[in-house]
Length: 467
Image (cartoon, rainbow, N blue to C red; front, side):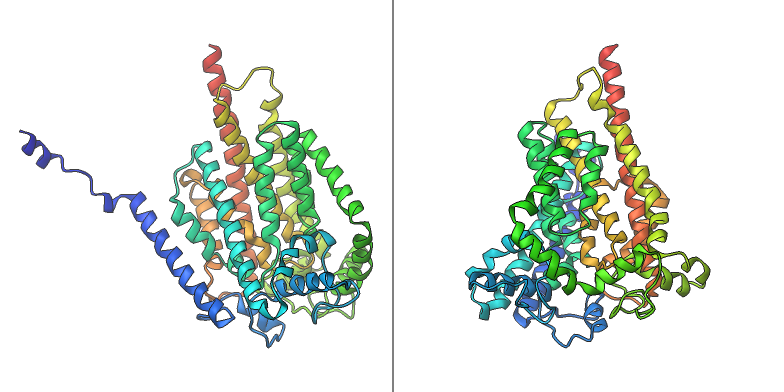
C-alpha cells in the first residue's frame, strides 16, 4: 500500500523547482563573475569583449587601461598627506589638485598601509570592497523584501545580478567612492529602525557623511522629513554642519582649490545659475565633454543634445537645469507625499498590531528603498554624473520589485536591462539615457506601491484586532 501510494505521489523533483533553478543560475553568475575579475586583476585592466564601461575611457582618449583610475586619485592623495604634504596644493595625479572633501581622505587613509609601488594591489582591494558593500546592501534589501511580504528572490541570484550590473562593474573598474555612500545609506536604514535616540543620531550621522562624500546624497536628507523622523532629520542637519567645522582647515582648502580643480563642473554651474549656456563650451554645455555618452546620465548637461538627437530641438531650448526639474520634480514630490502619507501611522494613537521585529523590518525595508531611490534620482540632476553613480539600481530593484507589479512596470524595467547587462549593444545613446530614466520611473512606481500596500495592510490588521 505504501509502495503503491509512493508511486502515485512521487516526491517532488527538487532540481526542477523555481527556487533551485534561481540558486543554480545565481551560483553560475557568481562563479563567472569571480573568474572574470580574477583575470582582470591579473591583467591590470578589465578584460573581455566590448562593454559599455570602456566607452568612458575612449571618450576621454585615455591611453591608460589600468583599473582604479579614480581610486588612484585618493590613493596618491593620502600618501601625500602621510608624507607631510598637502594634496590640495600638490596634485596627486594628472587630474590636478585633490578634488574631494577632507572626509574622503580620512576614509581612504588605510591606503598608507600599502606602498605606492603596489597601487595595483590597493586598487584591487578597493574594487573587492566595493563588491562587498554592494553584496551587503543587496542582502539588506532581500531582508526587507521578506518583511514586506514580496515574492522571494534567491540570495545567489540577487547577488549575481547585482555584481554583473553595469554601474557596479563601472564602479569597480574606476574605483570611485559612491559605494561608500551606498554603505552609509544602508547603515542609516538599520539605525533608524531601532527608534531610539542613539539610533536616530547615528542614522543622521550616516546621511550627513554621505553628503560630504558626494554632493547628491544631500537630497536624501530631505527624504528623512518624508519619513516623519524629525530627530533623525535634525541630527542629519547638525552633523552636516559639524563635519566641515571639525575639518575646518581642510574644508577651506577644498573649497578654494577644489573650485579650481573642478572648473569644468563649476563653470557649468555658474552658467546654469544664470540660465544661459557658455558660448565657449562644448555642445553639451561643458568644456571637454562630448554631447552625449552611453555611460553618463546627467539630464541638465545632456538636455539640449538629447532633444536634438530625437528630432525635437525646440524642447532643447529650455535650459537644462529647468528641464531636469520638469522631469524629476514631479517624481520626487510624488514619492515624498506618498511616503509622508504612508508614515502617518507612526503618529497614530493606536499601537502597531505587528510583532516589533516585523514592524522594524518593514520600516527598515521601506526607508532603505526610499533613500536608495532618492539618491538614484538625485544623480540625474547633477551636472556631471557618470553611471557608477547608479550603483543603487540593482539594490533598489531587489528591495521593491514584485511579480505583481504588472506589465507596464516590467516593460520599463526590461528596457533598463538593455544597459544593466555589461555587454555593449548597438543602441542609440539617446535611447540608453531614456532607458535609464524609465527604469527610475518604474522603480519609483514599485516603491509607491510597496508603501501603499504596507500602510493598507497595517490598517486592515489593526481594524481586525480592534473589532
